[in-house]
Image 1 (tube, rainbow, N blue to C red):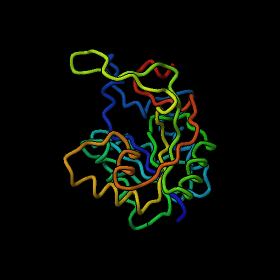
Image 2 (image 1 turned 120 degrees about the vertical axis):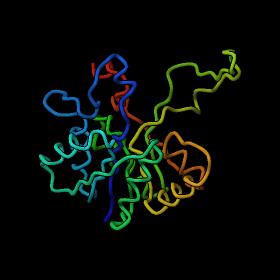
Image 3 (image 1 turned 180 degrees about the horizontal axis):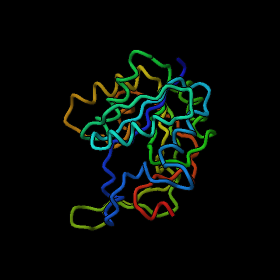
Length: 222
């Protein structure tokens, strides 16, 4: 199998629901389709992808099964229960692919429904060459670090700092090994490029897409 995708949707959408909204953000309907369905559609359009894994929270098991029951795609899609952190959920998704042993795995936020097939393919092609690839955007703002008292401690050069997006795409055996090693240390990683680079992988950054936003807050749907 050339490639697989892991779509992460195991969070509880707590920031999205901060304004007393109570629905899982990936299940929200946007112009006739759920957020997650739009994400799935983008990946099923890539011919190299032979299987898709979706991580989900146990409290929404029925809703996710209902979504898959009406899937129009011929590509197998399997549900994998998430863990207590994003890192744990992604590791569960990666391990679920072990019997398929794809060459490449694409890890993408289920709540980024406006990802384009062009962006997905670009990360795939670069990961084949370099081992890992992800889209990134240069910041439009002056970036600072602050100390625990709220004072600026560091002024950063914008030319070398990016905002990372997904899909984050890797050679499957290498990211699987990196996740396995990372699971044995007392540290919580924020994304998969951090895990991959910490355990020896190289990640080629490609130009990101400003429209490839992640739905985090209710107003992001606007």
